[in-house]
Every structure is written in structure tokens, then in C-alpha cells.
View (cartoon, one colour):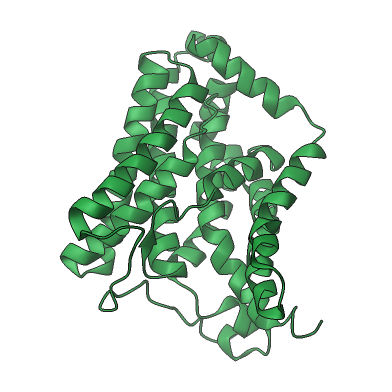
Length: 307
């Protein structure tokens, strides 16, 4: 038991939770403005593939992350244009983007790298690992918190910044008003559609970072459909956290821990198929025990307003 729940498991949890947390924060921002973004899976997948492409052609890790953000932004703009400007059903648009991202990355993998299934270049450099001064010398805590990629620490910082932004700033209150009651917000001179576009763009940035962490931070490769449902898990984390950054972070930590635990169990002669489905079992269980219907009502309201 001690070998199972050792320090490396908790360090792995922070790496595994980062793509889920970043995508969930993006989904929370969209939910706050009345957009139920089901396309998180596709946005993260585009970000993961774009990060590999940027790294392959530039050899610069910063340029690779920036390219991942730009590509996810383009997809998020498409989501925003169809759901905000054209008033299309956000659920349908999100699902369509997921299928588009899966097909496009599979085709591009063969067209650009001339490989099927996976691309792994040993010369590729992943995200750097940062050691935190002072903390790295603290027993156990230093092994858990230190030695991660910059995006891991950025995701933690974003939770605090978003919590402050949403509930302590005027712009944050306007964003909340645009999602709670668009009609009342318009009567006060608030440009609801502009705020919604801004939220969608922020979501695209976060999902681009999530994809970069997935393909360049957790590993240094890309495989077809490598998100493996993490975008949908992020959506559940958004729902469980009630679109509150701190609540979303807590929910994401639960799913990230189960993801890390499933990988660890494979080293204890556990059946691979059982360990791989463990995070998704927890996700379904969380949804079954999810009692608060407020978020679901907001999703239905956003669908009705988009018609």
C-alpha cells in the first residue's frame, strides 16, 4: 500500500490534472456567459497536435506552445461564430467540433509526418521542468510540488486569478451578468455578444495550453485521439465545480488523481483494461451523485437562447 500511495503518485497527479484543469477553467468561463462548451475535447486535441507540429518545424518550445494557442483560438472562434452569431445549438456545434478535430488531426498526422497512429521524434524537446527554490529542499513536499513544467504552475496561478477576476472586479461581474440575465445586461449597456466572444477566446487559449501540456509536458509525442476523453472529464469537472474556479480545481484534482492512480495500478499486475477505465468510472459516478440541477438548467437556458 505504501508503494502504491508514494510521493511519485501525488507528483504524477499534478501532471495529469493540468490538462483537465486548464480545459475545465476554459469551460467554466464559457458557462459563466451562458455557453455550454461541449467542444473542449476537440479544442484540447487541436492544441496537442499543433504543439507537436510547432515543435517539429521550429524546434522552439515557446513557439510550439504559442502555435498550439493560435490553432485552438481559431477553432474557438469557429465555435463562437456558429453559436453566438449564427445562433446555432451549442451542443450540436460542440459535438461537431469534436468530430472535426479528431478527423483533422488524424488526416494531418499522415499528411505532415507520413505516419499512422502516433508520431514520436526522439530529437523533440519537451517542456522544461522547473525546480522551485527552497520548496525543492523540503522533504516529501518538494518532491511533489517541484520539478514540473511551467504550465503546471500556470494552471494553479490561473485558478487564483480567475477567482479574483470573476468575483472581485467590475469586468468579472459584467461577465457574470451576461450569463445570468442577458436581457438585463443589455439594458445596462453591456455588450453581451462581445463578452461571450471574449470568454470563448479565453477558453481557446486555455485549451491550447492544455493540449501543449498533454503532448509536450506529460509526454513528448502525439497519438490519434490522445485526449482520450479528457475534454469531457473537464466538462464534468466544470459542472461539479459549479463553474467556480476553486470548485473546478477541486473536481479536477479528483479526476487527475484517479488518472494517475490508474497508471500506477498497471505496475501492480492489475488488468490494463480495468485500470484504463477507472477515471471514467469515477466520472460517471460523480455525475450520478451530482444533485444540483442548476448547471443543467443553465445549459438548457443557453440552448433556448441560441435558437
